[in-house]
Image (tube, rainbow, N blue to C red; front, top):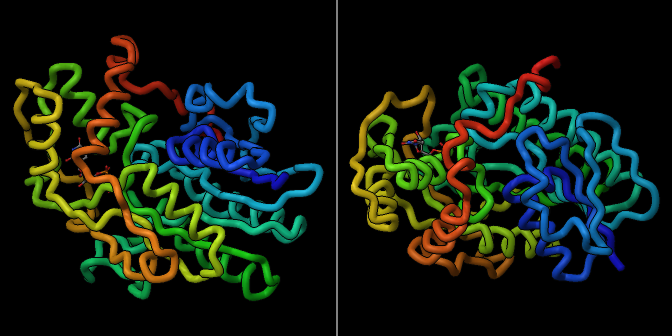
Length: 328
Ligand code: UDP
């Protein structure tokens, strides 16, 4: 039986990856310090005989006995609000955390997939973004802590690949959505759906002319799975190229939820990328992958999940108090 370590396991993407690997018959070692993750996301797996949860901060040395075949480094805060609240932790997990994962991979002879992001392209001047584009990032802006950590993460991953021969894979993840996204992490989809469910106006930042391209989580997991088991060591974009403006997206959420609320406009956050759309030629060519779930279907499934949340959960402003983690 193959054994896989997944960091950030209690987060949105990590928990979906854990589910997939359990379904595929792997033994899953799930690791998370629960700073932004939540054990609730793993509730269906915790009692599974092939699933073990480790409450551990991956920026500290990772001690895991026995053989290990695969590692997925998915631990990281992943929303602009989180980077503002916990910037140092964001930098540490993308630097010290990845270093520990790569060291563990080298020691165990495991193959490692690193979660990178479209944020490595910054506010892109090339559209759509292909993997050869070097990006346009403000190192000292509010998003810099995330963007630069992820860029460093790619560099150290390639260094371990080239100098130590570690089997590495790098996935550049574009905006992804689905069940178990955190309601109040500030990302646009949970923000809009939460507002609709609470009977509040939908907050569009800026004019709403900025674009994003949203990928349903099951498609993303399939792409990551194929990449990990492929021979591709270059970064690969995984995302859905179906691009939409945020203003049109708000209209879609209004139609989906049937809310009577309107949209209101707020200031655009600093360095908010104007456009984002993955060029997925490499994923199509090398992995034979492309998304199969369109936004209409994906949003329906995601909305069904958010409707299961209790009134109390819907009205909690933020389920995490980061105070304990700010000491670093
Ligand atoms: N956004 C918005 N209203 C909100 C939350 C976000 O208009 O209540 C905008 C945000 O400014 C950005 C887009 O939606 O242009 C996507 O934001 P998100 O934080 O989800 O992801 P990212 O900017 O990292 O792609």
